Length: 161
Image (cartoon, one colour):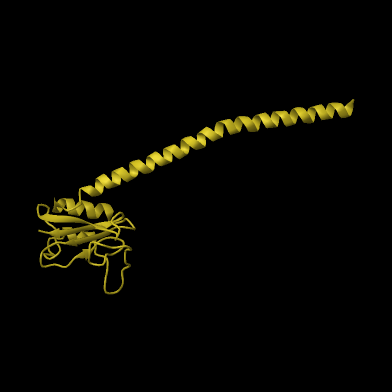
C-alpha cells in the first residue's frame, strides 16, 4: 500500500507540474507574439519619424538657426556626417563623429586623422570667426549625404547661398 501511495503522489505531482507548464506556455506564447508585434511597430514608427525628420533637409533652403539646431542635435550621432560651409569663401567643416569624403555620396563614414579634424560646434556661433560663423538669419542649402544605392542616409551638408 505504501508503494501505491507513493506512485499516486508522484503521478499527481507530475500532473500538477504539467498543468503549471501548460499554463505558463499559454501565457508566454501570446506575450512573445505581442512583444514581437510591438517591436515591429516601434521600428516602423521610428523609421517614419526619421524619414520625416530628414525630409526637411532634402534639397531645401534653411536658415542659419536651423543649421545650428541640426548640428547640435546630430553632432553626437556616431553615424552622421555633418558638413557646413558657413560662407562662400570658407571650406566645408566637419561636425559629425565621422567625416565625409567631400561629396553627397558616401558608403562609409571616414575617421578623422591629423589633417582632418572634427570642428567644435561652438565655431558656428562664434561671431569673431567670420569665415565659419553661421548667422541666424542667413540662408543655407541643405542636402542629404546618401549611400551609393541612395537608400541609406549618411548625413547632412549645409552650404551658404
